[in-house]
Length: 47
Picture 1: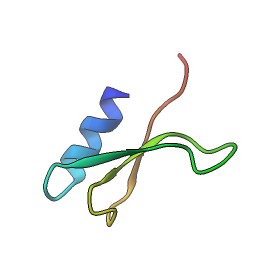
Picture 2: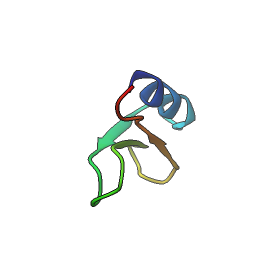
Picture 3: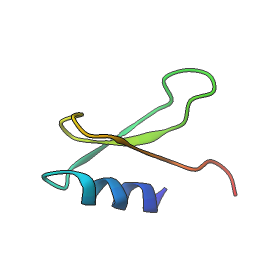
Picture 4: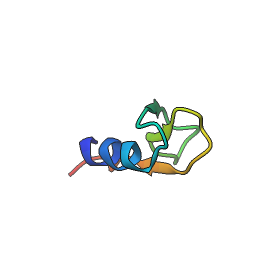
């Protein structure tokens, strides 16, 4: 999870991110930049 957050912080214009839950069955938790204008950094589940 830490790598996904750090990656999204670097990709964000202001370094601020939001963590989003899955949007439905089969989707993954992920990060967005705070403005939600950029891409997603997905969190790998399990080991």
